[in-house]
Image (cartoon, rainbow, N blue to C red; front, side):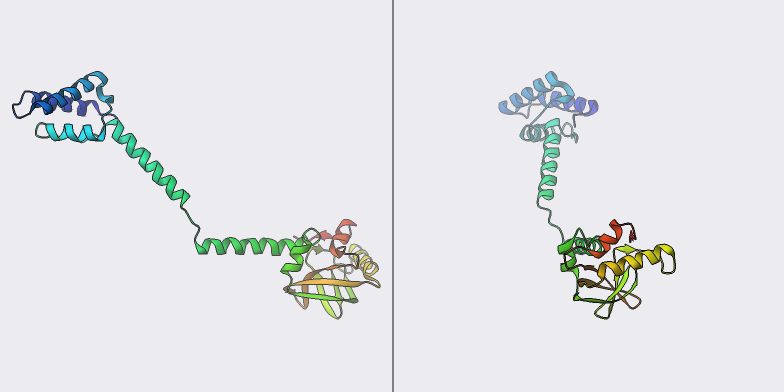
Amino acid sequence: MPFSQEKFDEIQRAIRLALVSTSLNDWERNFIRDMQAKLDRYGPRTCLSDKQYRQLMKLTRKYAEPKQEDVCRSRATSRRGLVQRRNRRRGWKPSIGLVLAVIALGFVVVYKGAERFPEYLGSAVVVSSNQEIVGRVTHVRDGDTIEVSGVPIRFGSLDCAESGTNAGERATARMRTLVAGQTLTCYLNGRTSYDRKIGSCRLGDGRDLGAIMIQEGYCRRFW
C-alpha cells in the first residue's frame, strides 16, 4: 500500500536531518538527495525499489524508523502471494479418500440408474448385476413380479397397482401375455424384497419387460 501521510512526513523529516549531519560521505548524501527529489515529486505514492528502500532506511535509521512499506514492495508481495496461490492450486492433488468417495458415488449412481432405467442403461445393467438367469417364466404373481426358472424376480423399475384392483389385474394379465412362451434373460443386482430378487428381464428380441409395461401405461416407474 502507499505511504500514509504521517509516515511520508516522518521519512521526509528524517531525510532533512540526515542531510544536515556531517557523518555522510558524498555518495550517501547524493543518494539521499535523489530519494528526496523522488519523494518530493510523487508524494506518498512514491514507488521505491526494495534496494532503494533498504538503503534509505539504513542511512536514515538513527533519525527515524518508518515501518510503512512503499507501493512497489507491497505490490510485489501481493504478486508473489498470488503466484504462490496459483502454484498451489496447479499442484493440488486429490487425496485417496476423495478419489475413493468419487468412485463410490459413481458406482451408486450407475447401480441405481441400472435398476430404475434398465432400458436406457443396457451395458450398466449387465456390469452391475451379480447374477444372470436365462429361462422360461414359471409363474406370474402380478404386474411387477414373475418367477423365472422358479426364482421370484421383482422388477426394480416398476410400480404396478396391487393385485385385486382393476388396474392391478390388467397389469398382471398383460404381463402374462408378454411372457407367454418366451425365454427371458434376467439380470439380478443382489438386492432383495421379501423373498424376491430385484432385477430386470428382457424378452428374446432384447426389449426390456419393465419398459414395455411403462410405455403401454399398465405400470408407473418406481422411484
